[in-house]
Image (cartoon, rainbow, N blue to C red):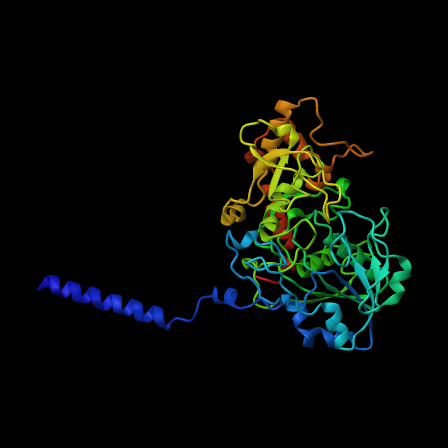
Amino acid sequence: MKKISVLLIALFVLIGIVLTSCSKEPSDNSTQKKAVILGDEQFDKYLPLLEGKRVALFSNHTGIVGDKTSTGKVTDITDEASLIHFGFDSEGNEITYGEHILDALISHDVNVTAIFCPEHGFRGTEDAGAQIDNSVDEKTGVPLLSLYASDETHSPAEEDMASFDVLVVDMQDVGLRYYTYYISLYYLMDACAAHDKQVIILDRPNPNGFYVDGPILHDDYKSNVGQLPIPVVYGMTWGELAQMINGEGWLTTGKNACDLTVIACENYTHDTKTSLIRNPSPNIKDMRAVYLYSSTCFFENTLVSVGRGTENPFEIYGSPYLKGVNGFDYSFTPKSMTGALEPPFMDEECFGVDLRSVPIESIWSEGINIEYLVSAYNAVMSTSPDKSFWGTPDDNGQYWIDKLSGSDELRIMIESGKTAEEIEASWQSDIESFKKQRAPYLIYE
């Protein structure tokens, strides 16, 4: 009898738990399942700010309103989906894109007087760092003003600042300090602050916005691949970063000198992982490359190729100097192609590592994996100790790896035999300090 009573009590408790759980409101995770609404879709919020104004646009081929495509937007980033090249569906068919922000503004009777173009040009096809002349958009007749028209400066020309009243920004970035688009944004904000021009950012998700990692840039190592004292992976959207640029006084005109408005995304948090719809630059060809770029970009201008001149740049790496070395048995041969006309080791067989089979969740959890660089350095030095792994320093004695990492500390630690774990541990305290510094500028949870 006693056993039956106990069983009945347990049954009633179980029923109560089930009823309680069924009556609860959906968890906060449900917001992540809602479609992210980009800033450029919210016309009612920013079109009134453009009435009667001459508008300059900072954008490129990625400025598709709402990221609309003929197949819809991929939301689940699986191992297989991460390898589908941008511009194609899962069956290899080309997709078509929705309306570009330039066409959308013009269709809403906005007076667009200029378009500022970043590295790779308005159509995103030019080689890394290539000089791009000013031109005119064939479809609309709007002047295209290149921020890469000269090797000397990537700031807007003084005469161009007189052609507009408001700058509208709509461009997809990948959220890494050495990805140059944000540097162009910084220069434009600085120029707008100096000339009393308003800046309106139509915010977009940061595909690497779910973590912060890497060393912070030292002032002495500012370059065309690094301008701000932030980590390699800074975990902020452009709207958030722009607020930090303004609020921290990083503009030459001083603190909060830029008249800045951010049209924030809806249904986005820093845990949201959204898939891009277009290659943001010629050699970022799928989502796996977007995630691996923070680790493999460190090979640039070393004796190891990152796969430029292949169909899988930043997802593979190798070198002729790694031939026969255990663990570097994957081979590829870089060829001249659009976006990589003269890739390193062109037409030479390289031996290295293929990262396309690494589980995508492992890449997310690892963040920057400096072991790739450490192991390749040690291997090349074991076969070719007379070679300069890092290439040639500039006139200031700085190697390209120094510019990418933000100082000479990473290079020196690798040369001295530090392990990847020791190196990654060395920047953790700076990361925590940066997280506290950026906190006031965050828009999203």
